[in-house]
Structure formats: structure tokens, C-alpha cells
Length: 505
Image 1 (cartoon, rainbow, N blue to C red):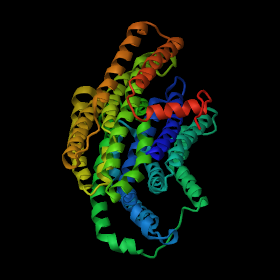
Image 2 (image 1 turned 60 degrees about the vertical axis):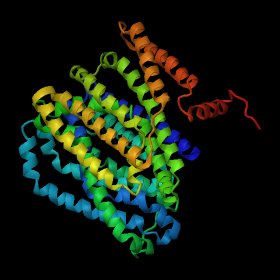
Image 3 (image 1 turned 180 degrees about the vertical axis):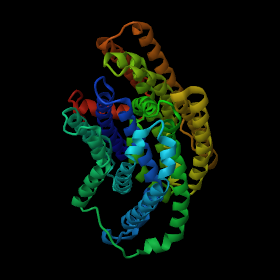
Image 4 (image 1 turned 90 degrees about the horizontal axis):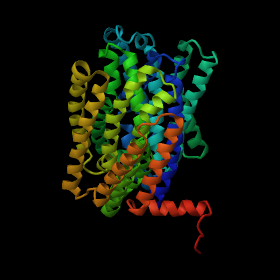
């Protein structure tokens, strides 16, 4: 468990550094005198479409690595381990199919986007290198997770990718990557860059080997692999479509087109800060969960489930309320373009969705690595069945830019409730206790104290004062209430590292 905690903490620190860099990039994209809303919106819709391409191209190979790597590793030498070879080969074949489909349906894209989002049509072909890079990186990332290299994968995905973007933005301001045409062409190859970087890192460490000789493990589990991948492939597609359908829909049906995507992307990106610890915990827990299911260690699975829930909930509540306290003041203080103030309520609803998703722990990872992984496809279908129509009707007929945020909150609440019920009924696993309620009450109390004290004051100084006051209330409250069994060990380790506490022999 300490290994998971250590990797989760290190990954979370890296993720936060990445999100700080990402927020800086967001500021550069949205500040007055920088990129237009349509240009920023185009980067948002590019990422959304790249995720769809990746979902189709990988054919569930990331999940295949996660599920079966322990069997390959226990029975094969490194040189005879063919799991990465097959995962990459099938993913590249899948990408070729996606490109063919993308060319076949180009006219449909033109009809849907030419009126409201003409720039997306103009740069349509550039989504393919972005999608290829994300596909390759996803496979290398899943493989690296099994090698317990979650920290380095977080570094590449969260920091180096955003650093590439930062450099491109500064080159744009320096008139080196202008006009925007040059910027977006280079931007479309950023994922290929980080995929190459992760590959080189694993190769130098001697962790990469390819063989086209079919191993005894592949032969033995072939039918199970095909069935597993078929189900997971469908589940991943429906899940990822539900994740990015909002941006794609806004670009098509909203009269503001890419400008609406830009507002939504800003709110979504800021809300993603709330989600930061989830990425580190998921990447660190995958290998442990796979091995625990193989060893039938239910006690370990239960510990991971409970601790992932309370740890993520503490971070999510704290970050959400801290940002919500300062959102409007921050938009004006840092001179974002005026229209971006609409992103406040987008952040609110997506932020609540993140809290619910994180508070229910690593339920998807537990189900996905269990023998009942087929249930993931079932819940994914339910999620899409809710998300797509809700997004469409709430966006087109009722709330406009805010529609997808409300739709996602409703859909993910139902989605996580079903998975919670399933784990409780099938495995008698559930992540909540009284400390879950204490966390909610603590967050609410700290928020209202800061709101009543500082709501009428604006400016950078008051943002700092509000933030410090909230942290001085929330962090000690978390420690005093001992909300998580991981908090005290982490706190003690921090004190030791800072030489503030004597280390016992």
C-alpha cells in the first residue's frame, strides 16, 4: 500500500505542476490581446476529436495490457514477452482504419461544422497526427504503468505536453509561429513528441522489447483476450464519446461555434484541476489491482477502494471550493477576455461532477481488472444513453453553453451510482464511512467562513487572503479529524524531510 501511496503522491505533485502550467497556458490563450476565442476553441475541439480517434484506434489494447500483463510477466522472459508488440501492431492497424473512415466522412463534417465552426473544417486533416500521437502514447503509458513507472508517465502527459504548448504560445507571441496556421500545424504533432519521449525513456531503461513470435501466454489466453478486448473496446468508445461529446456538439449546434467551445473549454480546464489527484491514484493503483485480483486478495482491493475514495474526496472538495471562492474575481483580476466570465457556471457543474466521480473511488479500475469486467461495457452504454440526448437537448433548446455541463453532472451521477451498487452487491465493497460526511461538512464550513468574511472584496491581494484563510481552516481540520489513514504518515514524512521532526531510530 505504501508503494501506491508513494507513487500516487509523486504523480499527484507532477500532475499539479502540470495543471499549474496548463492554467498558465489557458491564461495565455484567453487573455486580452492574445488568441481569438475561435482559435482557442479549435485547440479544445482538436483534443476532443483526438480522444475519439484514440478510442477507436487502440481497440482496447491499453486495457489488454493492464489486465493480462501479470500473466505475461510471471510466465515469460522479457525477450519473449510479446504483449507490447501486439498492442502496438493492432493499434496502428486500427489507426489506419480510422483515417480511412475520416476521409470517407469528411463531407459530413463539412456540412455539420462549416457554418458555425469553419476553422475546424479548414484544419480538419491535422486531427490525424494529433490522434496518432495520443494513440501511441496511450499504449506506452499503459505498458509503463505495469512497470510501475506511473510517475514518469505523469511527467510526460501532464508537464512535458503542456511545456511544448507553452513554448509554442510564446513563439506565437514572438511572431515566430504566426500566423495561427503555423501554430496549429506544429501543435498537432505535440502528442507524437511525448510518445517518442516515453518510448525513448523505456528503451534506454531496457524495458522495451519486440518479438513477433507468438508466446505461449498469448496462445493460452487468446480467446479470453479477444472476448475481453471486444467488450472493453465497446466500453471505452462509449465512455470516451460521453467524455468529449460536449465540445464536439457545441462546435456543431451552437451559433457561437468555436467561441462557445472556448468558453466551455475554459470552465472544463479549470474544473480539471479538481481532478488532478485522480490521475495519479489511478495510474499507481492499476498494477496493484491487477495483481490483487490475480491473487484473490480482496482485503487489499477493499483498502485501495476505500483509501482512493476518501483521499480523492478530500482533495476534490478542497480544490473545488478554493477555486469557486475566487473564480469571478480571478477572471477580472487577470484580465481574461470579457466573454470568458460565462465559464463560471460551466466550472461549477463540471466541478460537482468531478467531486462525485472522485468520491466514489477507483470503482472503474476495480471492475475493469476483475472477472466481471463486462459490466464496464454495460455501464458505459448507460452513460452514453444518458449523455448524448441530454447534451443535445439541454444545449440546443435550453441552456446553450451550460447545457453540456448540466448533462454531464446528471449522467455521471447515475453512472457512478450504478457502479457503486454493483461493487456493493457483487463483492460487498463500498468506500464510504462517517469520515466521508465529515469531509463534506468541513468543506462547507470552511467555504462559508471565507465567503462571509471576504465576498465583498476584489483584487489579487484578496484572492491570496481568501485562499490562505481557506487553507488554514481546511488543512488543519483534515489533520485534526484524521479523515484519511494516509494523511498522518504523509504529514510525518513531510516534517521529517523538512527536518522539522526528529527521526526515530
